[in-house]
Image (spheres, rainbow, N blue to C red):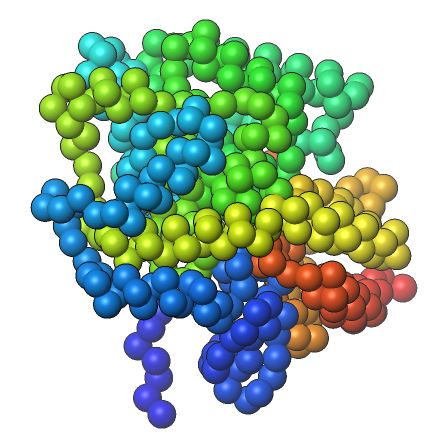
Length: 445
Ligand code: PMP
């Protein structure tokens, strides 16, 4: 067979997918995998759902594509209304896109255009966290704090002021509240040094995703950032590409903390793996200001097309019908308990953290000192391979930029049942037992 013309990443040949149903996928050899990470934290309702397929087919039979400047389309209006309702009308305007990167990119541009329209063109800089991941297009990459991804493009991406967020696993402060106070004071000082009136927006994920292994922020920190944004006169953009649409047990993760953003980016779970669709949600007055200045100078061909929006609407309706958020909370408790039991059993599990069905597991060489494994050992890759051999997909990442250590995410479909969680934990335990043997056999005598 000719080698595949596809190129994504260096790495071993991949098994070819055959089909999928519920939380399971099968490759061409018949091997079964439990989807412990919803693909890339996208397939939030599991695979092969008839209700989503039926909604998509019904829309395909009517019209798949229309361009947003030529026709209004009912699915787009209905999905926008549904999203606004999910924010309890705090955010009242919606701009559709097709991916998370586009959602972040659009939010950055909307923030910038808002300040241009308000006669504050000097507000052109963004503040974001290191580490963080906000996407791969040049704007979204510019606010991303993840060294290997940034390095080749640093000179041409927009860049941002990168500040540290709280790290409740590794900080040296007297206690967590003093840690948060210090991080907020450092952030305030960095913004003051950079010039508060040059800042357009602060961008952050309310719960860390892939770049931090689900590192949690907290109420005081988020309230502090909200206050800082208000005092600085900049906007707060929450990147809920990964956390939005139920992943943490609330429709949006900010709702756990009661801290409302000015702009919100979401994607991944909105199309639930059935079709690409993302959105920027905005405070009404921001959009009104921009529209009064001549309109948002931005857009993508596939934005808000009927098929994308019919899919997103079917996803939200299914989640409401099946009370999926309740399931996230119940299954999340079981998953947390199971992961903590594994942490108690294996000394190299340094930290287990998360919310709802978004969990991160950090692996360390020494739990007392929290020293990471040497980078060249690629432990994050080993645990992922072992899990896959045991029929479990997890989402791995070596964390850099201030969070030392290997980690992986456990983020199953939000519809997983109790038996699915038990099976996930059984397979993970088997992979971890094999990892344990490898670690011990590699340890110096
Ligand atoms: N923001 C966050 C928080 C993400 O997790 C991701 C994807 N991992 C993105 C943005 C980019 O989304 P996409 O890959 O759909 O462009």
